Length: 309
Ligand code: NCD
Image 1 (cartoon, rainbow, N blue to C red):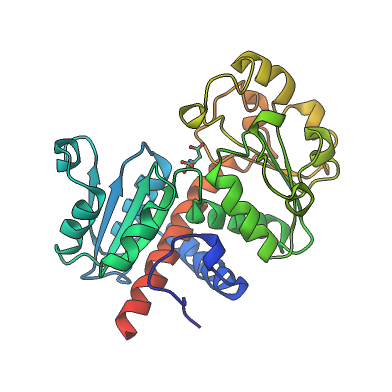
Image 2 (image 1 turned 180 degrees about the vertical axis):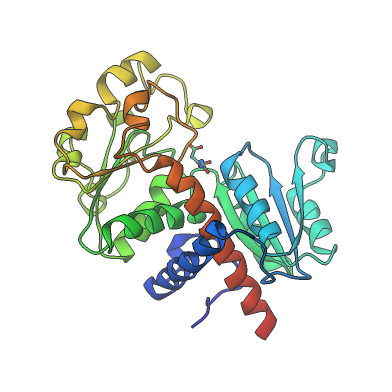
């Protein structure tokens, strides 16, 4: 069993079998992370480049470390300090990187669809590390991995995803992935931060955070994507915190052993209070470690696929 496509552009393009393959491979990679020596030879002689047009701590660093742990040569390109600031186009930038014998190009861009534009034009495998409001497949895969590790299976799991749904590529990718794996996804947020022109029943959009959290196995908070928001969608950040934070009262409605998740970065006291972020039910720091394991697995699977082509 191997991945079907050269690129990983979104969860929408993956089958349930491919998702399982990635999660199973990540399990092995996680063992590497807890070993005394974190070096493997899976990517020996390969080249991995990250191209980020938006800020990132977790995603970019975990891809870079994953590549290094597996023996690849890796480098970062970001808008500041590169020819992007001289006006070079996205396609020209990606082509230039491709002609440096690159095997995998990991890109983040504020435009939905940017990696889809690049993937067919270059030889390297493209991984979408977040494109605008569209998808963030590796975040969803690490979230699925974390849920499966704790709950044993994704099938039948009740997952509440709360907050700024409309601007969140994390919500979108998690929704596609969890649905494919047989989980029940409930979305909720302020009316102005919910998708408007879609079939609300198909997406299982709840009327309130409380309805979504009822007996949930997982409660996931999302960051308010202020950088993608038109003015006036929420009265104020403090009112959002007052009425929509993932707080203890809300969690009392969920299963007693519900996992608390957040993709980070978290605005403490806005999306959730710090005591919830740090509580024993929170797996937020585990999500970070699992992000490394999942990204190692994806790099390994994409490179193995290239090796047999
Ligand atoms: C997310 C992103 O960039 O979409 N962050 C991440 O990759 N961990 C979520 C966010 O920024 O809110």
